[in-house]
Amino acid sequence: MVNNFTEICRLAKESQIGKHLPNNLYVHISALIFLDNILQDYEKTARELINNTDFDLVKFNLEEPKISYLFYPDFDTNPHPALQKSIIVNLVEKTTKVMDYSNSNNPPILHRKETFIHPDYPHYQKFKHLTFIEENIGLLDNARYIGTQKEWQQLLNDHSLTFIDHNLVCNLDNNPQEFIKIDRHKAAIHRNRLSRPVNLALEAGLFSEETTFFDYGCGHGLDVKIMAEKGYESSGWDLFYQPNNPLKKADIVNLGYIINVIENVAERREALLKAWTLTQQVLIVAAQVLIDDRQKGFMVYGDGIVTERNTFQKYYDQEELKTYIENVLNQEAIPAGLGIYFVFRDKEKANNFRASRFHSRVRTPRVLQPLKKFADYQELLTPLMNFYTERGRLPQKGELIQEAQIKAEFRTFKQAFKVILQVTNESEWDTIADRRRQDILLYLALSHFTTRPTIRQLSPVLKADIKELFGNYQASCFLADEMLVTLRNLNIIKQICQELKVGKTFEKSYLVHLDMLDSLPTLLRLYEGCASRTIGRMEGANLIRFYFNIPRISYLYVPDFEEKKEPKLKTTMSIDLQDLRVQYRNYSHEQNAPIIKDKHLLKIREIDE
Image (cartoon, rainbow, N blue to C red; front, top):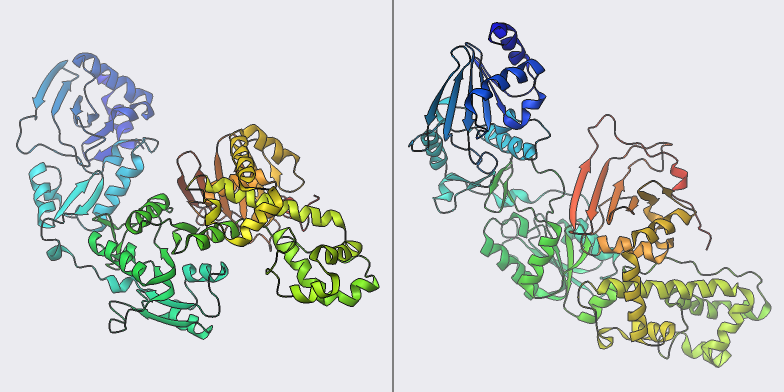
């Protein structure tokens, strides 16, 4: 092999694997198998002379036939590990030389660890991200600070920097104010429409005519302005933009994307508590949630990152955000969307909101043959039809405004409804009642994951629903728990998916348009609810994938679904229901982004019952 040294050098210089220096090639032990076979045989010849596998890197000398075996005992865990031992093999003389650095006060250290390994290595992305951070803030600009432990540590000390795992963080005990001053106010962005948290509260029906609104940390004040234009009494306060405005109590208080821009942990907690003291009905809490790739050249600061605009961002995991809110306020935080939670003062209203999230859309049955008796009273009977469509039952005393007029003509709601049945399809009303029954079961099943409310904590309307549709609360809870047990069997999920007349069934999953969710069998709605109850749905998602080989739900965003015959997938968010881990993928910049084929199968106007 030594006689072929010129060829060995050529192959080493052309290698796509390893870190190249002018006269050396460094390769991690795990990447040796990706080298050219000649280089592999050359290295094996040298290794036979040391009779030792206690090393991490192999250094190919390209000036003379020598190979060095370098031992970095904490290569994976230390962002810049120190060399402990080196064994140099002279392949001409067949001799070895050992150099011990274990007692050195300034040993060589590694930088850019991702260059030594193959991209498939488990920690490749972590190593690459760290290098990207260090390059972007200039730590690797001066070569004299790189390569040895003392000089590198001095550079970190000069900038009040340290490491937590492979995250570069500001050392808060070492004059952080001299190193960096956070410009919190720059985090306030300019918008031309309502923020998503406030808009979700509007869509959820949390605002009534008399509802008052306060925006804690209102930034430029657009939410306050728009809500005032909609007729709600609105005001706001902001530490930088509106510091002289009074703090006011209000029915609904918005704390939108505030706690994630406060770098001080104590101040962050104080902001959440202050907003809660101002809340009379519902507190909206929104924060940045880590689903995307945050490896964008920003430096980690404390428990968050400093952006290129010199603002702080704390990126929460969705479950972490929920836990944080609940621990600080000692109240349940109900997800309204990704990174957005509603916290209710009143438990009954909280339960009503939870139940409303699983209230499926149904149509009031059409009038098939307008008999004269119905035609004469159609205007009076329409509210009764609408009530039954909404609740799946007839009203109880005091639930319908038109009660006195209807009873004056028909004596009872039941008699009035008999007239409605004469001109409509009775089976459609039975289907509506069953749909409402399934909605309640879905709500009760998912409440099992938190604290299921007692019958006394339910609203009078929901109590009446349960009594009419199930007989009693215990029966409804029993059926809900039976559904949860059934859900564990993914083979049943697969069978259900394969029998549906809408959507596409694949080998391991079922894909359907999100608009069809309300019409799907309750077990599938429960499956999806297990994901959205804590994580929320991805913004803009219009397709949903149910897996039946593993417990996982994926939301897909296909922006041109309605316009193009074969639209391209833009983003996906997958939720593993075993540990609630979220994986996000963006296909925007990929030339070969997946294409949605046979889209007409994913969404239809009606599904056969």
